[in-house]
Each structure stands twice: as C-alpha cells, then as structure tokens.
Amino acid sequence: MKLSQGIRMAWHSVSKQKMRTLLTVLGIMIGIASVTIMVAIGNGTAEQVKSQMQGLGTNMLTANVVGRGSVTSITLDDAQQLTDIEGVEAYAPNITGNVTAKYKTSTYNASVQATTPSFADIREYTVAEGRFIKDIDGAFSQKVAVVGSEIVSELNMSDPVGQKISLNGASYKIIGVLESKGSSSAGSNDNVVIIPIQTARVALKTDAIRTIYVQVEDSDKVDYVQQMLEFNLQRFFRNDENAYTVFNQDDLLETITSVSTSMSTMLTYVAAISLLVGGIGIMNMMLTSVTERTKEIGIRKSLGAKQRDILFQFLVEAAMIGGLGGLVGVIVGSAGSKFAGRLMDSPAAPSVDIMALALIFSMGVGVLFGFLPARRASKLNPVDALRQ
Amino acid sequence: MSKREQTPLIRLENIYKKYTLAGETFNALDNVSLTVNKGDFMAIIGPSGSGKSTLMNVLGCLDQPSSGKYFLDGEEVEELSENKLAVIRNTKIGFIFQSFHLLPKLKAIDNVELPLIYRGMSSSERRQQAKEALEKVGLGDKLHHVPNQLSGGQQQRVAIARALAGIPPLLLADEPTGALDSKTSRDVMGLLQDLNEEGNTIVLITHDPNVAAQAKRVVRIQDGKLTEERVEAS
Ligand SMILES: Nc1ncnc2c1ncn2[C@@H]1O[C@H](COP(=O)(O)OP(=O)(O)O)[C@@H](O)[C@H]1O
Ligand SMILES: [Mg+2]
Image (cartoon, rainbow over all chains, first blue to last red; front, side, top):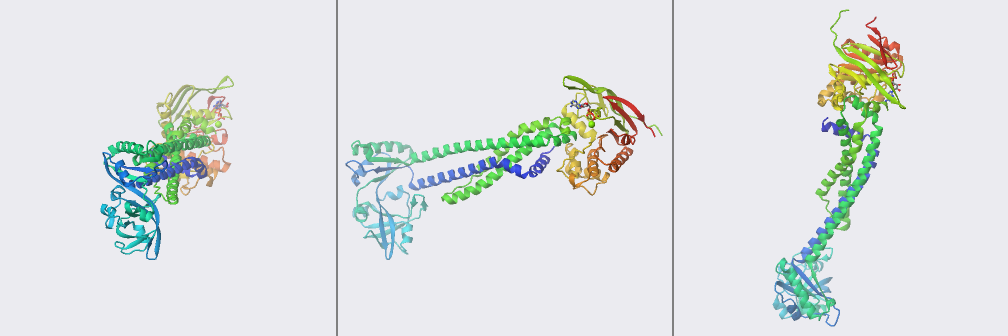
C-alpha cells in the first residue's frame, strides 16, 4: 500500500470522529502551544535585555559608591586615581539627577548626566547635530549642554543648537543634539541632558560623584581591570567592602544566558511531559479504536490486507492524530506568542525552528504510542475478527 | 452435455480441523477430501454447527487446517506465511458473507476498491475496475451511496461486486442469502447463477435446500464429515 493511500485512509477515519480526535489531541495541543508561547516570550525577553545591555556599551565596568561609611562620594581626582589601571581605555565619572528643564513656555522633567567627554564613547552616544562636551568646557565650568532627541521634541525646540534652556533655573547653552537610541524597559535613552561634570553643582546642587563608567581595552582584560579596580576601591574605602560595588556587564550577560538556557531546558521537560501525556492519550484512543474496529480489520484481512498494511494504516492514523495536535498547538502557540508579545511590549517572536520541531515530535509521539495498538490490530486473527 | 476438460481448482486431501473445548478435542472437520473443478457451482449444505463455516475458512485461507493437504489453483497452501496467505486471499478468492461485511463509512465504490488497494493497483485503474464490477451487479447508479443508504439485497450486490472486482478464480459465499427475504434471495441467487454461466467458479454454503437446489453440485456436511449428494443433476 502506498503512503498517499495510507494518508487518505487515515484522514477518512480521523475526520469521521472529530470530537474524539479533538479530545485526544488536546493534551498535545496545550503542551505544544504553551511551550511555543513560553519559548517565544523567553527568547523575546532575552533579546530585549541583550540589546539593552549592548546599548550600554561593551567591555564596560561600572563602579558605584553606595554611600555608607565615612566617605560617601569621590572627587574627580579620586576617580582619576582609582581608574589608573593598565588596560583601561577610558573612564567617565558621572553624577545623575532629575531636573525641570524649561524652554520658552515648555517644561519637561529631564534626566541629567553630569560627566566628562569620554562618556559619549563609553555609552555609545553619537552626536547628530553640533558637538559633544569637551574637556575645555569642563575646565572652564562652561554651562553647556548636549540634549537627547526627546528633550528637543518635548520642549518644542525647532533649531536647538545655540538655544538656551534652563535646568532647575540655571541657564545652559545647547551645543549639541544626540542621535536617537530608542527606548528600553529601563526608560528612554533619549530623555537625557549631558553637562560637564564640573557644573553639576549648578544644575544638580551636588558634586558628589557616585558612579564611574570604565571602558576596558578588550574583553580579555576585563577581569584584571575589575580586580584592580576593586583593589583600589578597597584601599580607598579602607577595607569597607560595603561602601562600593563594581558591576561587570559581561557577568550579567552570562547570567542571563545561563538563565535562559536553564529555562529552555526546563521548557523541554515540560514539553516532554505534555507529549508523554498526549502520547498516552493517543495510545488509549488507538486501543479503543482497534477494539471497535476489530470487524473492519477482519474484513480488510479477508480482502488481502497484509499484517504490514494494517500496521501501516493504524500507524499513519496515530501519526496524523499526533501531527494534528502539534499543528493546532503551533497555530494556537504562535497566535498566543504574538498576543503575549503585544501585552508585554516585548518582541516575543515565535521561533520557526521550535514550531517545526514541535510538529515532527508530535507526529513521532503518535507513531511511538500508536505502535502497540497498531501491532495488536495487525496481529488479529481474521476468523476471530470477522466473528465479532 | 459435452464433457469439457476438468482442471481441479480446489483439492482437499484428508483435512482435519481440531478444536479443543473444555479439555475435550473434537474434529470440526473430520477427514474431508474434496475436489472442485474450474467452472463448478457447488453448494455445501448442512445443519447449524456441522462445520460449514470452518470448511469455508479453510477454503478461503482465513484459517489453517490441523492436518491434511490443500491445493488451491495448483499451489499447496499448507505452511504458507501470513503474508503469502494474504496475497492468496487477495488474488485468488472473492468472499461473499452472510452479513455482507461492508465497511459502513465507505461508499459502495470505495468498498469495492478495497481488494484492489491491497494489490497496489493505481487509483485510476482501481476506480475503473470497481465501477465495472458494480455495473455488472446492476448498481451502476449507486456508486456513491454508503451501505446504510442501500437495501439488504443491494448491499449484498455491493459485496458480490467487491468479490468480483479483482477477478479471482474462486468465489466463496457463506450463506449469502441468509440475511435476505425470499424475493431478494432469488435475485441474488440469479446473479450468482449468471456469474457461474460466465465461467466463475462458485462454492456456496447454505443450510437452505431451496438455495442448494440452484447449484450444479451439492455436498452435505454433517459433524464435520463430507458426503457427495448430487452431481450435475437436472
Ligand atoms: N474457534 C472455535 N473454537 C472452538 N470451537 C469452534 C470454533 N469455531 C467453530 N467451532 C465449533 O466447530 C463446529 C462447527 O462450527 P461452524 O463451522 O461454525 O458450523 P456451521 O457454520 O456449520 O454452523 C461447531 O460445533 C462450533 O461450535
Ligand atoms: Mg456458519
């Protein structure tokens, strides 16, 4: 018997018992659908986090002064000494704060980064118009600002470079506009006003540096630089290890990767269990079906069906039932992924690989769990089967 | 009547079929020897429980005898594999059962095609041959009816068409009129007689002497033993 004939025969009998088939494939369907959705969400989230992290810059360490103990902040000179380590490509001390930005009649709650010129390279900001802050701006405590695109639009500025805006009442001259970087769940990258760190006291009423961004020359040296930086900080804070933290972006990336790896391992188990349960359902249905169709099997055998014809017929049927469950599961799953993606505002993309795999696996489960019933059917004695 | 050359289609030699019930062994077929020639129309008659169906199952290669030799169309059937027996059923025998044994969910034409499917015939060839068989039994206008849209007599005609479709050398009918009323029975018997006229070899099992009377040859079975009753009479 040919495969096409077997498929037609199987479809005929499967489609004649829709309700039973539906109930049987429900387990596989739900399993496949939920795994598809969860994998999509997992992938989407991991991608999102990764792209955010890459937005922060590569090979980067962040030293934070937590602010406990007797010394709660550092000075520009301290920052320079602490980061005087072989392998450091650039560093940028940083003071952050929120200010009310005003331009003409518009106001906006803006996020300010008071820092040095290397900040642009480290955090991967590029200037779209005008220029970035320079050392000389800092040296002369020039009240100049580079603004993000969101500031420009929120303050309704048409030709921002050269205009003056007020930051908490202090007047700053705009010398540049940043290229848009888009937003992440951490907030908008474009709501930013960058000013020379020496003028932080003017706009932010503080000159206490609590953050240093450190860029390392290449990834091999990150660990060494991190150790040295920690060593320097430890000495600076007189062995008070609670006074500071050093955050390595690569560590976080690694953590996320391992979390998503263990999540997909777990999802694989979930999928395996749901396929197992679904497979048992198929076996149950096929056993019932063989019992009910004993006479049909007898008739077919009397007409010349060989054992392998009967085996084949029931195997194709089981594979079809499994495949149908997988197919509906994949359809429901990809619709669900899109829906979940929209709900969570994350790019939850259903993966084609996973869907193809799910389909193949559910057909395989059908064949595997259909084998015993199919074999039983093929071994039926035609005389006994016909007597039913 | 001119004597034509008689080649045996069936030769049974000392066939026994033993069954064991409640520890006691008895012979459902007891030393049965029988020769059926090509073109014969033979009735096997006997009361219920006499061994008719057992004999039919052996003749139809659905069951193997406990001992004895069986030659069908020149080939010894004994000790053949399941596969080989399936091929013999498919190519050499057309079954007609008392309760029709049609697949209820298949249309008439699909039922008739079944033996041809297991022969690996192409689908267009199959269709054609099945259609011809149904036309032959007078159901050319009922190709796409499912069994329960047909009367008992029509269903048995579909079953006869299915038996004929593969053009087997032997038609085996087990009480083919047992489930039919007397008028329909006559129609079906008429059809079988026509088929025999055309050269088909038919072995028919019945407990009804009126049905047996329409066969060319009658053998009687009683407690598994076979006796010749009438040859080429009337
Ligand atoms: N599978 C079986 N196991 C035991 N006894 C059987 C079996 N099949 C038939 N018999 C017995 O063999 C005898 C002949 O049965 P059967 O050929 O069906 O008779 P008939 O068709 O003439 O009514 C009966 O006594 C029946 O009970
Ligand atoms: Mg009987």
